[in-house]
Length: 298
Image (cartoon, rainbow, N blue to C red; front, side, top):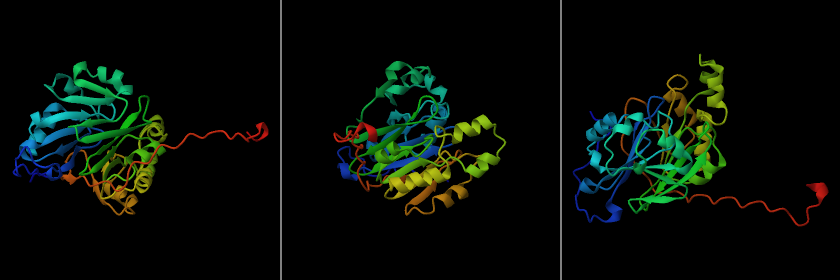
């Protein structure tokens, strides 16, 4: 049985009203061997698709999309969180991309050019933008290794999706950017006890746990509490060596949302993207020095 059924046999009117077009997420794979999710917008012939990360080979991605009823020519966009090989497969340099646009933050342009994909397929952003003229894309830049990572907030009048992985720590920028989304997909990478007890080298443990690597189950649950999503929490990028779905679920048991655990080898069911619970929090105002502060008290 197809674990991620698609519903293409719905009304096929290209003039279908905006409110009748579904907005949904499916995580195709998530883990150290490849990360790739797909969002769809529309129904029947109006359906358009966008990948978030492209860490699977183009052939595997095409096959999985076809099994879900999505043709490759319905794929318009790819959003890239960062260019580690498990988030952007090098096979995409030889894929027939046609009109597909690959969107990455401007800070990632050197890494993007190193993939071998022709520059004309990339769009680099440093401010919010829109897909399909109706889906707004906002973002936060966060610490991860040397180049950092981009977390996305995708929103329209139907729903609000937060997507964040390879985060290092639950930074205030993450909480502000994704606060109140309807559906939240967030990394819950490792159990600290399993990480410390593993046979991994010390340098790797320090990289993962050092604040610019990955989120632990506890850190992820803390971020979820602060973000306060409305309906769904999708756990991403669980370590096969240093985590277990049941351990991650225990840490996230306090949330009132439905908790869905993704994995490396089987896609999730379609997850409807729920309406936003609250708006993104404003940036904090810069602290202004008081006119009455004395030199002695500074």
